[in-house]
Image (cartoon, rainbow, N blue to C red):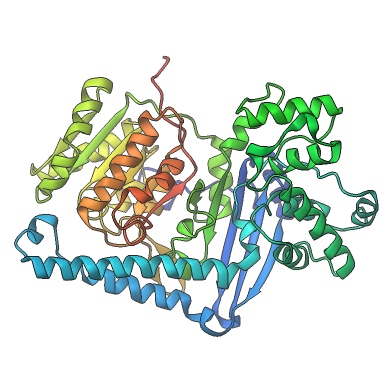
Length: 507
């Protein structure tokens, strides 16, 4: 209704929740694309346990793994929270303009302190990956196109009795960077194979497949290779392994030359593979996207699997690049940001007709502009303090019938706040409720100049790159544009689904 009650909010429809397990499974089959992996990470503090659930197109059914936390690994979340609190204390009330009055010694001390914190963030994320997830980190990887490995006949016969052959094949396709011992651990922990001899046999064969081409692809000579070697090399590259020898040679040569096979109609989809993270409340502040194994991958977040299915059921299309708006420094106290975005604002105004406001003006004017732009445009950029909630409340936002893909580049714009026994809240969830395909926000406070570097790099990659990056891919590739690639570069996260590169309207 329009009365402002709960009925006005755009809660996800229960496409998978109203018919029990069968309805849930049906919704997955219907809406989950082959290139999407949805991974839930739940911390059960009472039991010192982390539970990972993966639902993806490269598995027949979901996989669940329980990881017991031991020793110092129990306190990683607390240590990370404390570090971010200390980092935010170094920027409280500080702008780049205010720092110009510092003497050289004070500035050097501040810079050195921030660099140390940057290294600590990186180190803690490495600890999360190695001490929490270990080999199970493969479950967080984007969905790959699955290639059936050509097993030794005896191994194949043994695996035919395995309950989760799809998991074994998943491990084989995602273990290029694992040694034999780690592959064995994957087979035990994830595929749950208890036969030690079978585990050893399968792990050795998988490692043998990958060893064929690891670091040696430039030295491969397809015409001189045996059929088994050709198939192993093709499997390592994620290419089909069936066919006559001449077909295998041609396929491998085409790959080594950087050619695409016209018969592989799913290749574009595989190149756009992505992971959607669903995190329990205590983990919302952790930038898992910047762990070593995920940092260069396309990764987004969503509040729940129901939201993922709801958004997938509607589809995510390319925004119209001629339908954009920007709000830059609405309080007028970030002159360096206005200067940094000057060329960008001129370009999108002249080339694509974007509307925009910047600097001090009537608050009501800025508020009205932001409200209208979010409903009428395809892309909205906000660069100012916080999330712009002083211009537009989350209560207003939740009632929008539609909402643009949005970049909220202020301090802690993507941070969620605890509500006791209830789920955490934050304005980015209001954007999701309003139907926003994706919103980029910062998990903690950042410095203006460094986040401006990130934002400009993201916009350049998403809007103008020939690589046709999605917004989430552009976010991942822009983290190192920051001088502090972790203390600032890890703060931005993308909530929603990967939004394709904008294009000119054909209407």
